[in-house]
Length: 197
Image 1 (cartoon, rainbow, N blue to C red):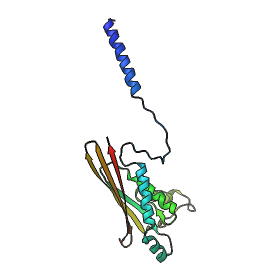
Image 2: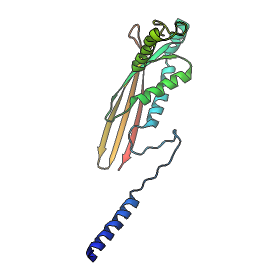
Image 3: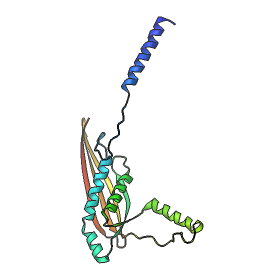
Image 4: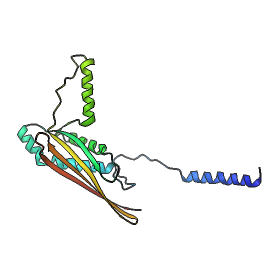
């Protein structure tokens, strides 16, 4: 091999080694509740804080006491869709689960399944009609009917100039009486982040 070829190979190997050592990445485990804002986008901390604030608002509304006093029982709530109308791709299911957990933890309402999970339960119940023993088979028509449905939207506004950017989010939730279509509570949560690149 010629000397120039050997020097080229040695130089290429050296450059590859330097490049690979610079490209190394470290990963560290952190507590799930630790606030870490890397990109400025909506993240799990935003979802959790928003859910806690909105559930606190909802449970503090007059609708809960009015219903409990009139009906002499806890209201049954189903959490429906929370539509993402923001500029980002958000997994609203994370937010919905946080809302459901906060509702259950409060012990002030009863919560029933919605959407696909409810359909899965009905499918299991249908299978039991053919395959489960009569003494363990769960019957149709025994579901707990919801009194209220919670639905909402996530919206955002982005403003930027040069290397600076602000992102504003607003999550609006409504609680509607399923029998009368009366909106009994409306709440919102606003958040804003300032990012400098």
